Image (tube, rainbow, N blue to C red; front, side):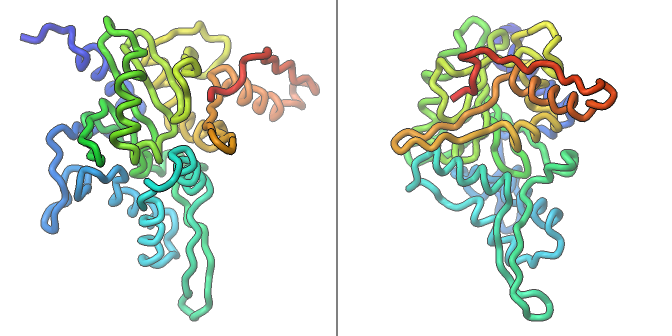
Length: 308
């Protein structure tokens, strides 16, 4: 008989349920079957060191760029999937982020033989529902130093953009950072080339950061859509506040920044109040006539800057 006190029951399953309420597809990959010439497998991966779901990525690239030859679609898939182990991890992350946001440049001859240059869209930013959203639990990933199994990985168009590491409520959430995330970065670094957000949670306490965030810069996400909401620290609030499709794409496209220090580059993310405040200011600007020219004050005190 189940005790009802496992990490899976208390934290992971409620998180999965929230994603499903938001319209995400879900697969438990603990017993994943790899792809073969005769079978697509569970996720389309041929080996466990692959972290890009190439079949989904290929399908979306073809859908978003219907006039581009198949050969150039494959060029884009290879560019997004290629080995970046020789690069500094945050620089690899920046390179892939820019490809996700701005597209992949390709060159080919059209039907008339003329050379054409196109930028292939990787994500449909204007129409969030056109993208693929897949949450995968218990995904085995192989690296040079062993195999790891993150609790949850969220994929947009086959790219692993969010990583969840979960603990029982009785365990401090910092353990997920100091023990698991640090280990993952060493063992399966390829997963972090694509990562945009890292969620750490024990169900009660939930923190969010980026690939470069030290523990003290992991932040809470207490409000979903309005600064006037009562702040609630929970994994459900954080998921609804960040992973709802429209909000996630807005955050990915507009609220991430790289700081290129010569020796120590950083990836910065907007905090909860900044994201809501900026979008409220934009909405107020759109209604400036009906508000008779009044916009209000966008007040952020010293020390409320982006998370590094």
